[in-house]
Image (cartoon, rainbow, N blue to C red; front, side, top):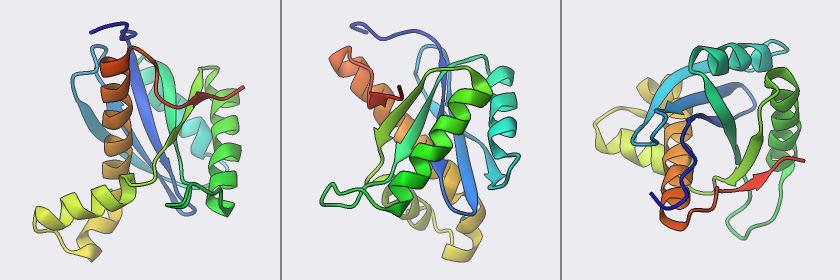
Amino acid sequence: MSGFRRGARLGIDVGKARVGVARCDPDGLLAVPVETVARSEASAARIAEIAVEHDAMELLVGLPVSLSGNETSSTDDARVFAAELAEATGLPVRLVDERLSTVSAHAALRDSGRSQRSSRRIVDQVAAVVLLQQAIDVEKSTGIPAGALLS
């Protein structure tokens, strides 16, 4: 574990209607789903509570960019929400390219035999797991935290 910073982290998949939340253990061995938070004025406060419950050291927020790498309205929305989370939690927030996390989540759920309809409630959590696991893996293999720190 070359330079892996020990500590629990939350992965956040920001959507217009729902926010998927995942967490990992302090050693970053496994990312697991936590909760799907309905998107509202209270979302950031609920995620701040989850961060306290799991003693999170930082939040990794998925930054949705187009496959070509361009920013979209969803990218702007995720940045605004990330800033709200930074304020609500007082924790460092890292923006992580999540280009394929939702696609990977849908594929994983499909492969496990779940229908699109039955997956809807948990796909956000699974997407958060995928982006968090990718970020942990990057930091473990390079010693450099994934994504960009929100300033």
